[in-house]
Structure formats: structure tokens, C-alpha cells
Image (cartoon, rainbow, N blue to C red; front, top):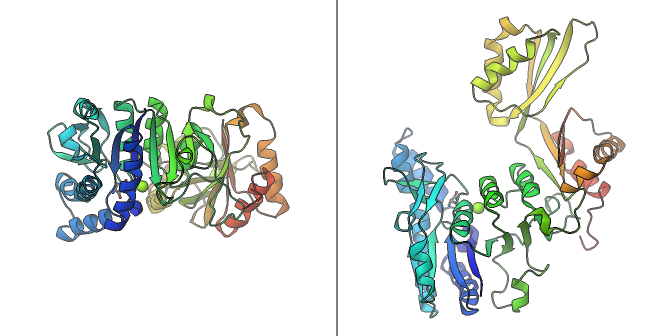
Length: 420
Ligand code: ASP
Ligand code: MG
């Protein structure tokens, strides 16, 4: 017998028919004698619709009331799944965040879970009851409803798994796992059987949208093993497919559980990048502080930074990247500090993409970056900026080359799968 959290996303719960399919997955685990907590998202599109309603009601609305509205999507699916399970003869009960209680801080619209009182749920396992928990929501310090930020039901699932000390947290979604690259642009991409928390964190924050970034952080801290798998599979397929068989999804786990550490496990790309260049900045001490100080104070996250070699010993060009949404704000900040900084011209552009290769094996291997640069050079793809970390090398390139670069790198690191 194991203790499991099963989380289902919005596309898996899109209508009553899909919910019936999910119920069969839950029934399988309950009948196998496992203690089960299910976490549900809202039906796909439901949260977006609720968010729109709050803006229609008033463009400037009270964040506490926003949470009251947008949290309702999960109440619907939790109730419907409990009803469906009962119809299948499975004992099930729905739970809203405040009923458990899932306690959070008071940051409405983006709250963090601080504590979960899971005693009641655990007590009911003795009677074989399955708990169906509305994801994405909790209760704040003032006892008002809070929500955890978009995609937050992944976080609900991980936090619950930590609280009940689950053996595993299964994240059922519309893809059958985490891939070595986006399969829509890299035909040879294949499913990764095991990936470490750290690698997943990089992949998630770089736009592999399988898991919410914050939930991966939480899983890493609490050592919750996550199995990403498809809800579209046949719920009654042979049981072995649902244990740790390679056939079922991707296990996100501690790197100690990964025997064969890949030098590069995956390639990720992020289009949410913008490039800012200051042309002819004075090349003297203090200039960087005068540029990046005001940006930091404006809450703008600078990622990659490149400073060119100075030709004349007096001037240099300086380039950095910011999230695309922050480009206008960043340009404004630099313009207002023009006097103090001193530069000839300011250029912003959004037709750039950041491509990264990620792998924990990089720590103990040289030449990973060199392979990347050579592969791109062979295709005449120009690198505009570079950053590296212990387990990642990222380059900034022209966004027109996104697909080509991703494919070329996928091949260069031997990731192409034979059946891809
Ligand atoms: N329903 C919420 C959203 O769409 C939470 C989730 O699906 O994880 O953001
Ligand atoms: Mg999601």
C-alpha cells in the first residue's frame, strides 16, 4: 500500500465525460488499496473566464474579491469528481482550501502555502475515503480565500504530498511526460524517463510549461517525488504501467535516484526575452552600477549581460536582456538616467530568443559550451549573448533561428530518439 497524491489539470477535467475518465484513474488506485488524495484544477478555460469577469466588473478590483471569484473553478471540479466517484462505488469527499485548512500568506492572487492541517484527511484514509481537494486555493491569515497564482494547483498537490508524506505525487496532464525538447519544433524529441529537480526547475522556468516553477522548487525542498504522466491513457491498462515503469511518464526526483547522469538532458527555449543595447557608454568605473541600480530599483530582472571590448579605451557597448514585458519600462528607466550614465544611443529589440542546454552531468564534463557554440556556428547562427550556470548554458540568438537552433543542438548532444 502506498500513499499517493494524484493531480489532474484542466484539460483532463474539461467536461463531465473527461471527469468520468479521471474518476477511473482514481478508482484504480483506490481499489489497489492505496491512500489517495486527488487535487483538481478548474475545467480548462474556466479560470480564464473567471478572471475576465472580474475585470469586466471593474478594471481595478479588490484582490481579495478576485480570489473569491477565481477560486470557484476548482470547487466545481472537486464536487463533480466526488459525485462521479461515488457513482462508481468509491467513497469520496470534496474539500475546499479553507476546510482542510490549507493556510497561506496574505498575498492575494499569488499566495504561498505556509501550513496544511492534514490530520482530518489522513484520519479518513482508515475508512478508505478518497479526498478530492480543490487546487489553487487556500485560506489567508485573516481567514479570507486566497489563490496561489496561475498554474498553482501543481503547488497545492506538492504541498499536500509533503504534508501527508506521500510516497509519490502523480501529476496527470495532457502530455505523457517531460521531453528532451519541445516536440512541436524538434521532431526527434523523446520523453525523459527521469529528471532531477534542478534540471526540471531550469526547464520549467525556461518555458517547458509542464509544471509550475514554484511547485518544482517546493518538491525539491520537501523531496516530493513527482511523476508526470498523461491522463489520456487507458485507466485500466495493466498495473505495471502505473508503477515506476519507463512506459509511464517522467519521474522528477533527487539526482541520487538517477544512475546515468546525462551531460545534457534537455534543450529549452524562452521567447519571453528582450534585448537592450546602450551604444557608446563611457568605459569607466561606476557605469554599470548607474545602469543596473535603477533597473533593480524598478523591479526589473536583468538576465544576460554583455559588455564589448572597448576600441578606444574610452567607450564600450553594453547589452543586457530583460523579460519582454519589461522592455518599455527598462527603456524608460535608462532614458531617465541618461545624464548620469552617459551614452550615445539606446536600442531595444524583442526578436531574440534564449536557448539553453541543461544537464546535471555538465558539472563534471568540460566542453559542453564549446559543442554548443560549434553547432550553432556550423549553421551560421550568431550568438548575441551567453550565460552559464553549473547545469546550464544559455545563448541569445535571433528568434528566426529558434527551430533550427533547437534541432541542431538536440542532434549535437545526441538526444535524437530513433523512433522520433
Ligand atoms: N485553474 C488555475 C489556473 O488556471 C490553477 C491551475 O490550473 O493550476 O491557473
Ligand atoms: Mg497546469
